[in-house]
Picture 1: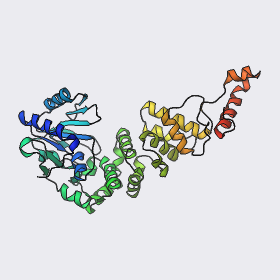
Picture 2: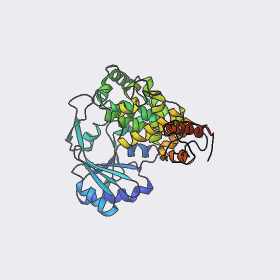
Picture 3: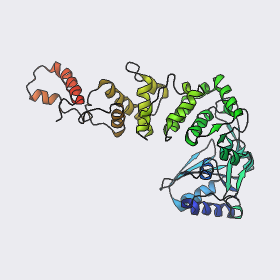
Picture 4: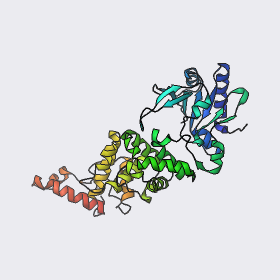
Length: 364
């Protein structure tokens, strides 16, 4: 028996385990949280899987600990967000059937934890820890994940793994970059064959976008991009994707996305190409677009900027004057009061003033 549960969450885990035992539900913690605890790392997402519909456990958890709950009907998952920032997923054991490459699977309920583990991406994620009272902390390892974690190896569980779900290529790159792991020989061969067949090109842009966001959340996304480049998979995020150490100037995913857009899509008139290809949600698109327009013009804004906009511009323009990102100090009314009679010249004057303010030509 290996006891791995973190002290700050042990009471909640024991409580859910006790409730599960009393209600005859075999419940396990599974996947990434188990992997990270074995590595001595923190993980703020708890994934539970059970041999029955876990709705009872989800309801109990909400009633006792508060927070909000969302159900994902396609996968039978209940996601609870607690007030302390902890995220908890409850799901039933399941197996999966992939009808086409790169398409989300058909979910089939499974009877045992072993069946559930065998449908996962890598052996390091195919681990479960029992939370039941009579075998609390026992690790279920049906694929050799414990050994592979110790060796720092990423190994797929079956030969069609990357064909079924090419997002696993991006996940493998994240683990290589984050943990310093390596692919085992067969896994690397299967990955490169999948890329050569252009299977990742079948993924929807929504799934590619989420994989990019996950990469940009990493402490050092450069390492992840390096592995994808080595495997010729970087182009599936965006053809000609460019990245640099500027990404390490911030930990904000949104700011990193803006920097990546600036480095990858070039100057106007192609300035929106990267963002349109990625198609992020509208507010994020507009914030980044606004920041890049100012970056390209090298002119102070006409209105107050949001934090994300300011940070993108500052990183791309480290020598900018202190007043450069403040709203333009003058407007048309000021020009009118100052006696400028020709209103058709106002726009040109204000544009020149914005460029001068950007350069530090005036400060008030």
